[in-house]
Image 1 (cartoon, helix red, strand yellow):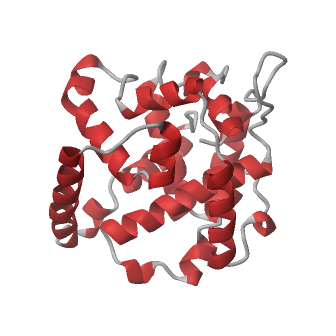
Image 2: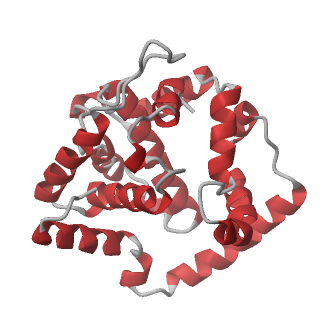
Length: 241
Protein backbone atom coordinates (compact mmCIF):
# COMPACT_ATOMS: atom_id res chain seq x y z
CA UNK A 1 0.00 0.00 0.00
CA UNK A 2 2.91 2.38 0.58
CA UNK A 3 3.77 3.48 -2.98
CA UNK A 4 7.54 3.00 -2.64
CA UNK A 5 7.03 -0.52 -1.30
CA UNK A 6 4.32 -1.35 -3.82
CA UNK A 7 6.40 -0.34 -6.81
CA UNK A 8 9.45 -2.03 -5.33
CA UNK A 9 7.52 -5.30 -5.50
CA UNK A 10 5.75 -4.56 -8.79
CA UNK A 11 8.89 -3.54 -10.69
CA UNK A 12 11.35 -5.92 -9.04
CA UNK A 13 13.92 -7.31 -11.45
CA UNK A 14 14.62 -10.30 -9.19
CA UNK A 15 12.63 -12.90 -11.13
CA UNK A 16 13.49 -15.66 -8.66
CA UNK A 17 11.55 -13.75 -6.01
CA UNK A 18 8.65 -12.73 -8.24
CA UNK A 19 5.38 -14.17 -6.95
CA UNK A 20 3.93 -14.42 -10.47
CA UNK A 21 7.00 -16.15 -11.92
CA UNK A 22 8.02 -18.35 -8.98
CA UNK A 23 4.98 -18.62 -6.69
CA UNK A 24 6.21 -21.63 -4.73
CA UNK A 25 9.63 -20.18 -4.00
CA UNK A 26 8.27 -16.74 -3.17
CA UNK A 27 5.76 -18.21 -0.75
CA UNK A 28 8.47 -20.31 0.90
CA UNK A 29 10.91 -17.42 1.32
CA UNK A 30 8.24 -15.09 2.70
CA UNK A 31 7.02 -17.64 5.25
CA UNK A 32 10.62 -18.45 6.16
CA UNK A 33 11.35 -14.78 6.83
CA UNK A 34 8.39 -14.59 9.21
CA UNK A 35 9.57 -17.77 10.95
CA UNK A 36 13.15 -16.53 11.25
CA UNK A 37 12.13 -13.13 12.59
CA UNK A 38 9.65 -14.51 15.13
CA UNK A 39 11.24 -17.81 16.16
CA UNK A 40 14.81 -17.93 14.87
CA UNK A 41 18.05 -17.60 16.82
CA UNK A 42 20.31 -14.52 16.39
CA UNK A 43 22.65 -16.70 14.32
CA UNK A 44 19.95 -17.83 11.90
CA UNK A 45 18.60 -14.28 11.61
CA UNK A 46 22.05 -13.04 10.64
CA UNK A 47 22.44 -15.76 8.02
CA UNK A 48 19.01 -15.09 6.53
CA UNK A 49 19.57 -11.32 6.52
CA UNK A 50 22.73 -11.87 4.48
CA UNK A 51 20.84 -14.05 1.99
CA UNK A 52 17.96 -11.58 1.62
CA UNK A 53 20.38 -8.69 1.15
CA UNK A 54 21.75 -10.31 -1.99
CA UNK A 55 18.30 -10.15 -3.59
CA UNK A 56 17.37 -6.75 -2.17
CA UNK A 57 20.50 -5.21 -3.68
CA UNK A 58 18.72 -5.32 -7.06
CA UNK A 59 15.45 -3.81 -5.83
CA UNK A 60 15.79 -0.10 -6.52
CA UNK A 61 13.98 2.40 -8.70
CA UNK A 62 15.27 3.60 -12.05
CA UNK A 63 14.60 6.61 -14.24
CA UNK A 64 11.28 5.17 -15.42
CA UNK A 65 9.87 4.40 -11.98
CA UNK A 66 6.94 6.61 -10.89
CA UNK A 67 8.30 6.74 -7.32
CA UNK A 68 11.77 6.40 -5.84
CA UNK A 69 12.51 3.32 -3.77
CA UNK A 70 15.36 1.23 -2.45
CA UNK A 71 14.90 -2.07 -0.63
CA UNK A 72 17.60 -1.02 1.85
CA UNK A 73 15.67 2.11 2.88
CA UNK A 74 15.11 1.70 6.67
CA UNK A 75 11.89 3.74 6.60
CA UNK A 76 10.37 1.43 3.99
CA UNK A 77 11.46 -1.57 6.04
CA UNK A 78 9.81 0.05 9.08
CA UNK A 79 6.48 0.10 7.22
CA UNK A 80 6.81 -3.54 6.20
CA UNK A 81 7.72 -4.51 9.77
CA UNK A 82 4.80 -2.48 11.11
CA UNK A 83 2.40 -4.33 8.80
CA UNK A 84 3.77 -7.68 9.93
CA UNK A 85 3.47 -6.73 13.59
CA UNK A 86 -0.07 -5.39 13.13
CA UNK A 87 -0.94 -8.66 11.41
CA UNK A 88 0.27 -10.53 14.50
CA UNK A 89 -1.96 -8.36 16.69
CA UNK A 90 -4.94 -9.09 14.44
CA UNK A 91 -4.29 -12.83 14.63
CA UNK A 92 -4.20 -12.66 18.43
CA UNK A 93 -7.47 -10.74 18.57
CA UNK A 94 -9.26 -13.04 16.13
CA UNK A 95 -7.77 -16.48 16.81
CA UNK A 96 -5.56 -16.30 19.88
CA UNK A 97 -5.37 -14.50 23.20
CA UNK A 98 -5.76 -10.68 23.13
CA UNK A 99 -4.12 -10.56 26.56
CA UNK A 100 -0.83 -11.39 24.83
CA UNK A 101 -0.86 -8.00 23.09
CA UNK A 102 1.36 -6.33 25.66
CA UNK A 103 4.05 -3.68 25.66
CA UNK A 104 6.66 -6.44 26.01
CA UNK A 105 5.29 -8.28 22.97
CA UNK A 106 5.28 -5.03 21.04
CA UNK A 107 8.96 -4.41 21.83
CA UNK A 108 9.78 -7.93 20.60
CA UNK A 109 7.91 -7.09 17.38
CA UNK A 110 10.84 -4.89 16.36
CA UNK A 111 12.64 -8.02 15.11
CA UNK A 112 10.35 -7.92 12.07
CA UNK A 113 12.46 -4.96 10.93
CA UNK A 114 15.79 -5.45 12.67
CA UNK A 115 16.11 -8.86 11.02
CA UNK A 116 16.82 -6.73 7.95
CA UNK A 117 18.39 -3.24 8.04
CA UNK A 118 15.90 -1.31 10.16
CA UNK A 119 17.76 0.22 13.13
CA UNK A 120 16.18 -0.65 16.48
CA UNK A 121 15.74 3.02 17.39
CA UNK A 122 13.55 3.55 14.31
CA UNK A 123 10.88 1.29 15.82
CA UNK A 124 8.34 3.52 17.61
CA UNK A 125 9.25 3.64 21.30
CA UNK A 126 5.88 2.51 22.70
CA UNK A 127 2.65 0.98 21.45
CA UNK A 128 1.07 4.42 21.73
CA UNK A 129 3.80 5.82 19.49
CA UNK A 130 3.25 2.93 17.11
CA UNK A 131 -0.48 3.70 16.86
CA UNK A 132 0.33 7.32 16.06
CA UNK A 133 2.83 6.28 13.37
CA UNK A 134 0.42 3.70 11.96
CA UNK A 135 -2.54 6.05 11.73
CA UNK A 136 -0.54 8.88 10.23
CA UNK A 137 0.97 6.59 7.58
CA UNK A 138 -2.38 5.02 6.71
CA UNK A 139 -4.03 8.43 6.40
CA UNK A 140 -1.42 9.47 3.84
CA UNK A 141 -1.48 6.28 1.76
CA UNK A 142 -2.49 6.51 -1.89
CA UNK A 143 -2.99 3.33 -3.90
CA UNK A 144 -2.94 4.03 -7.64
CA UNK A 145 -4.58 1.85 -10.31
CA UNK A 146 -1.37 -0.04 -11.14
CA UNK A 147 -0.71 -1.18 -7.59
CA UNK A 148 -4.41 -1.71 -6.92
CA UNK A 149 -4.71 -4.15 -9.83
CA UNK A 150 -1.50 -5.90 -8.80
CA UNK A 151 -2.80 -6.35 -5.25
CA UNK A 152 -6.17 -7.64 -6.48
CA UNK A 153 -4.39 -10.25 -8.60
CA UNK A 154 -2.57 -11.43 -5.47
CA UNK A 155 -5.79 -11.45 -3.44
CA UNK A 156 -7.50 -13.59 -6.10
CA UNK A 157 -4.46 -15.88 -6.37
CA UNK A 158 -3.88 -15.18 -10.06
CA UNK A 159 -0.22 -16.03 -9.45
CA UNK A 160 -0.79 -19.69 -8.71
CA UNK A 161 -1.79 -22.80 -10.64
CA UNK A 162 -5.26 -22.75 -12.26
CA UNK A 163 -6.64 -25.60 -10.15
CA UNK A 164 -5.45 -23.92 -6.92
CA UNK A 165 -6.92 -20.61 -8.04
CA UNK A 166 -10.22 -22.30 -8.87
CA UNK A 167 -10.39 -24.00 -5.46
CA UNK A 168 -9.14 -21.22 -3.22
CA UNK A 169 -9.29 -17.92 -5.13
CA UNK A 170 -12.74 -16.94 -3.86
CA UNK A 171 -11.81 -18.03 -0.33
CA UNK A 172 -8.63 -15.94 -0.44
CA UNK A 173 -10.54 -12.89 -1.64
CA UNK A 174 -13.23 -13.24 1.03
CA UNK A 175 -10.73 -13.70 3.87
CA UNK A 176 -8.41 -10.91 2.70
CA UNK A 177 -11.23 -8.40 2.43
CA UNK A 178 -12.41 -9.47 5.88
CA UNK A 179 -9.00 -8.88 7.43
CA UNK A 180 -8.50 -5.48 5.79
CA UNK A 181 -9.22 -2.47 8.00
CA UNK A 182 -11.94 -0.24 6.61
CA UNK A 183 -9.44 2.48 5.61
CA UNK A 184 -7.60 0.02 3.37
CA UNK A 185 -10.82 -1.17 1.77
CA UNK A 186 -11.71 2.42 0.99
CA UNK A 187 -8.31 3.14 -0.55
CA UNK A 188 -8.54 -0.10 -2.56
CA UNK A 189 -12.10 0.77 -3.62
CA UNK A 190 -13.47 -2.60 -2.57
CA UNK A 191 -16.40 -3.50 -0.37
CA UNK A 192 -17.23 -6.48 1.81
CA UNK A 193 -20.53 -8.01 0.74
CA UNK A 194 -23.02 -9.25 3.38
CA UNK A 195 -22.30 -12.84 2.30
CA UNK A 196 -18.55 -12.31 2.67
CA UNK A 197 -19.07 -10.77 6.10
CA UNK A 198 -21.17 -13.71 7.31
CA UNK A 199 -18.68 -16.26 5.98
CA UNK A 200 -15.72 -14.41 7.52
CA UNK A 201 -17.40 -14.25 10.93
CA UNK A 202 -18.53 -17.90 10.89
CA UNK A 203 -15.17 -19.13 9.61
CA UNK A 204 -13.27 -17.35 12.37
CA UNK A 205 -15.63 -18.54 15.09
CA UNK A 206 -15.04 -22.16 14.07
CA UNK A 207 -11.29 -21.72 13.51
CA UNK A 208 -10.84 -20.06 16.90
CA UNK A 209 -12.39 -23.06 18.66
CA UNK A 210 -10.39 -25.59 16.66
CA UNK A 211 -7.07 -23.81 17.20
CA UNK A 212 -7.49 -23.98 20.99
CA UNK A 213 -7.29 -27.79 20.89
CA UNK A 214 -4.47 -28.17 18.37
CA UNK A 215 -1.12 -29.47 19.68
CA UNK A 216 1.72 -26.94 19.61
CA UNK A 217 3.41 -28.29 16.44
CA UNK A 218 0.17 -27.78 14.49
CA UNK A 219 -0.37 -24.32 15.96
CA UNK A 220 3.12 -23.34 14.84
CA UNK A 221 2.69 -24.76 11.32
CA UNK A 222 3.96 -23.83 8.73
CA UNK A 223 6.62 -21.71 10.45
CA UNK A 224 8.19 -24.63 12.31
CA UNK A 225 8.51 -26.49 9.01
CA UNK A 226 10.08 -23.43 7.36
CA UNK A 227 12.70 -23.20 10.11
CA UNK A 228 13.49 -26.90 9.79
CA UNK A 229 13.85 -26.50 6.02
CA UNK A 230 16.17 -23.53 6.52
CA UNK A 231 18.38 -25.47 8.92
CA UNK A 232 18.55 -28.31 6.39
CA UNK A 233 19.57 -25.86 3.68
CA UNK A 234 22.34 -24.50 5.89
CA UNK A 235 23.67 -27.98 6.71
CA UNK A 236 23.66 -29.12 3.10
CA UNK A 237 25.10 -25.92 1.63
CA UNK A 238 21.99 -25.05 -0.38
CA UNK A 239 20.86 -21.46 -1.04
CA UNK A 240 18.80 -20.09 1.85
CA UNK A 241 16.40 -18.28 -0.46
